[in-house]
Image (cartoon, rainbow, N blue to C red):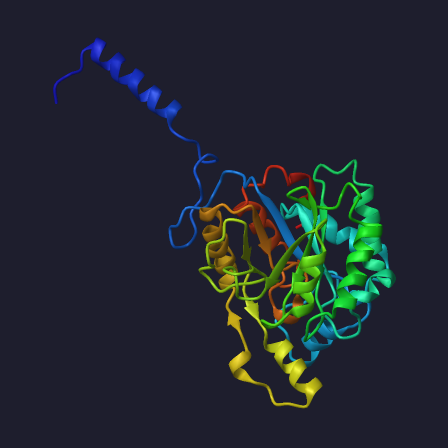
Amino acid sequence: MSKLSRRTFLALSCLAAVAIISSPSASQVAPKDSEGNGLHASPFKGTVAIFYSGHFQEISRDWDSIEEYRGPYHPMLGYYRYKEKDDVLKHLKWIRRAGVNAIVYDCYGMAEWGPMDMRKDRVLKWIMEALENQEKEPRKLKLIIYIEKYDGNPSLKEYHAAIEYVREHIANRPYYFRWQNKPMVLTYMNGDRTPALAQLEKETSEFALRRIRAYDGKDNWSYINEWPQPSNHEWMSVSPGIDSFMENAYLGKRKGKPLDGSKWNRFDRKDGEYFRKQFLTARKVDPDFIFISGWNDWQYGNQIEPAVEYRFKYVDLAAQMLGREEETKPYRDEH
């Protein structure tokens, strides 16, 4: 090899320096999943909402099912029943850690209570109190009410009662979420026929009402979907997986029917890969909302709430996939 002149050597050195300076650092390069798909490093600009249930204050269904049917995961907080406000405050801290913007509060996915029982819900009260006093929090949370009735649909009277409670007590609070300049309320649908909901929508103009149900995303917003989820530029759901065995076993026992395996939906978590894939699909579409289903829906096996078995894996994975790791650092003091 011929010797380089001093001038050529200096020129090549300068080019090498420019290449090093201009090349992206490790923190700037989007990470890859196990299949080599790029993960989004840039922060998601839309709203991240998450399903949250307070029904444990009234019924121990999920905890009983975990014991009876040997569920694979157990909550890090233990089998809480919301006897103390600290349970709610701990959840809010962890939800902020996940990069979430809004809590979608379920009223009520259980048989013991319905939409007319909001006034006696102490968990909802504690959440409202906490969101009223979050001035010192780096991340401010919003609240969205989600109306449903277990194994059916609310009557018009029940819808009216729930809407009136939101109107009277929550809708005008600074922490309540507004969509298109109106307070948002989500209405969960069981089945296709919902005449009471159709009537409510006709007569209620001051709220942004949005229909939601499982495995939709085309005609209505979706609570949950199998990967790859349908593209929807307003709302897309993501979940860590689902295993509805415990719910189907519970329903079978409650109704005196054998377990129907054809209704047992199961999408394996694959140690976080399923969650990543769902996030990647949603991030490519870049919808107004990414909806995480859910926080503590243990009966259906799609919770991201910390468990003894996986700790903060799914909470921190959500923040990563949203590109919100930096802004959620103040809440990452537990391991």
